[in-house]
Each structure stands twice: as structure tokens, then as C-alpha cells.
Length: 124
Image (cartoon, rainbow, N blue to C red; front, side):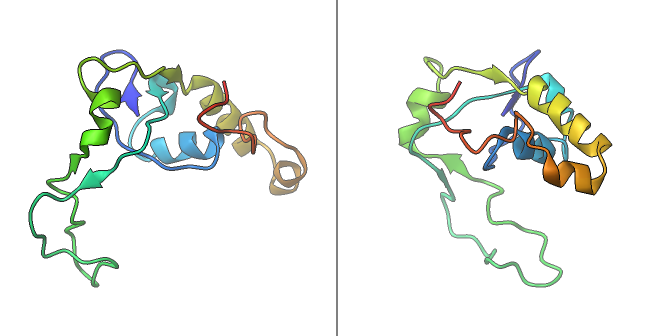
């Protein structure tokens, strides 16, 4: 996830739909101003031993990912010659706002076009 205006990194998110993705991004910034792309196989790694454990102990603030780096497999996706196709999250943000405006019973009975189970890396 990155900000549209300046490509600033927002984070790495995992979500089953665009609506849920917009909701996650909303925890840290306005998702209407963000873009997303599907990355291929890869991951985040902790390059040195960490005292952090999962699940975290009560009162533990370290996540274990403070010094994480992305894997070599992500270099083509996230490096300077990236060919990722970035897409605006604004349509999903508008869908999220509409869903929040409905009553819980309306939301349960109405499918949102941005909360489509067909949401996948291959989908446009």
C-alpha cells in the first residue's frame, strides 16, 4: 500500500476484499488517497535474532518486525524497476462509507460491489 500523491509506503496488508482492505488502511491514513498492488511470492524477514515472541506477552510492545526487510523474491515487485500495476483504493473507500451509513440489517442483506469474493490478484 502506498500514498497516491508521493508513493510513500503505508504498509503491507492482507485482506479478503477491497472493502476490508480500505477498512484496514483507514487505521493509519485516508484510504481514498492510497493505491494498492498485488505482490507476488515473497515475505518480510527479521534479519537478526529478536527477543519478541508471537503471540506477544502481556505488556510487550515489540512486534519482532521493527527491523524487517523484504525477501529477494519481492525485489522485482518493490525495487526500482517494478512493473506492479497500482490501483486506486478510492472506489473501495466510497463503498466502505456507504456500508457504514447503512443499518446493520441492511448491510447484512446487501452485497457491496467492492466486497466481492472474486477479489483476487488476477481480478481488475
